[in-house]
Image 1 (cartoon, one colour):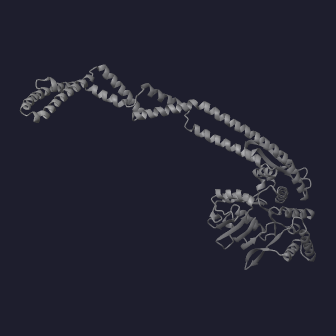
Image 2 (tube, rainbow, N blue to C red):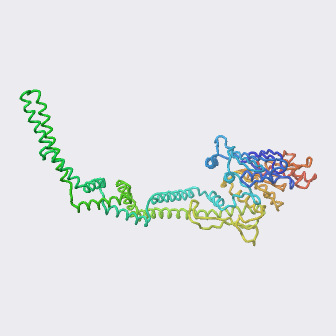
Length: 559
C-alpha cells in the first residue's frame, strides 16, 4: 500500500505530508485547489517525465517521496525485481521508498536511497500502483496486462509455467546448437581445408624430416671435399710410410726393449701404447665408414634437393616449423570431420527442435482453449458490474488473435468495449473518456480483485458525468474493492466521498500574493462540512451530508 506521500515545493504546494489508510481514501476539493498535484506526484514517482516548470516559483528545487509496502505474497517477485536493479532490500522491513529531486538543471531518482533510472521507477510502478485517469499510467489497458489478468482469473499459472519451461528448453537447445556450430566451417571453408589437407598429405612429411634431409643435402653438396678430407686423414693414420700406426709401432718396439730392463715399471707404458695403436686403427675404420656413406651420385643429390624444397614450401605456407605444419594438418582434418558430420548433427538438432515446438504448440492450444472458456465468464461478470455503474446495456468482450506460440502461449487479446447500444465496440485502450474509462476499470477491478496483484489503485474523477443512484453505486463499489486493495480516488461527488474510510480535503489560499495549497485529513465534523460544500451548502446540505455519512457507514464494504 501507499503509506505516505511527502511533497516539497511542487507547483502550488510548499510542503505537504500525507499518510494514507489501507482501504478507501477519498480526496476532494474545489476545482483548481490542487487535487491533481497529488495524482501528478504519484505519477512522477512512477517514472513520468519531470521538468523544471514543476518547481514552485521562487525555489531552486522540488522533492517528492513516498513509502510503499507490499504483502508477503508480492515479496518474492518484487524482491527479484529489486535485486535485478541492484537495490538493497530487507525482507523484515517490507517498505520501499521512492524519491525524486527535480532541479532547474537535472533530475535525480532514488529507490531506498539508491540512484536509479526512470525505467527502474516505471518497472516498480507497474508492480505496485495503477493510476486510472486521462493520459495516466493504466496498466490494465496494455494487452500484456489484460492477458495476465485473464490468466490469473482463470487460474492458469501451471499452464503458463509449462509454456515458459518449454520455451526455456528451446532457448537452451538453440544455445547448444550455436555452440556446436560456432567452430564448424562453411562449405567454402571446407573446400579450403580440403586443399590444405591435400597439400600436406601430398608431401607426406615425417616428424624431424626437414632437419634430417637438410643435413643429408648439406653433406651431399660437399661430398668431394668430404671424401678428400677423410681419405687424407685415413692415409695419415694407417697407410702412409710415416703413418701414425707405424710411428706408434716403433714406439712399442722401444718399450719392449725397456721392458727387459725394467719389467715392472714399463708394464703400464706398454699397455697404454697398445691402446693407442688400437684406437688409431678404430678411428681409421670410422673414417672409412663415414666416407662410405657419402655419395657423389648427382641423381641422389637432386632428389634430396627436391625433397628439401617440398618441405620448405610446406613450412613457408603452414609453418614456420614442420611441427606447426602437423598442427595445421590435424586441425584441418578435425574441422573437416565436423563439416562432414554436420548434416547428421543438424538433423538431430532439427528433430529435437520440432519435438519441442510441437509440444509448445499443444501447450499453447490447451492454454488458449481454457482462456476462451474463462473469457466469457469474466466478461459476463464485468458487464453485471457495469450495469450497476450506469452502463445498463454496455458491451464487453475479449477478442483473441493467434500469434506465434511463446512463453505466454499463442494468444494476443484485446478487451473490446462499447458503453451504449448501437456504438461500435473498440479496444479498451482506445477509449478517450476518462470518466467512462475509470468506471470500466472499476468494474474490472471489482471482478478481478482476487486475481490482479497490483495492491494500490488510484482513480481520477471516476464519478464524472454521473449522479443519482449510479453515484451511490460507484461509491459502494469503491468501498467493496477497498476491502482487498488500497484505493485512492479524487472525487467531485458527495455520494462517492461519503463512502471513503479516510477523507482528505485539498484547499488553497492566498498569502502575501502567493498561492498555497493545503491537504488535510478530515474528522467527522470536517467531513460533514466538506460534503455539505460539495452539495451546495446550507442547512439542508449539511443534513444530507450527515445522512450520506451515516448511510455509508452501514455499507458492507465499510469497516
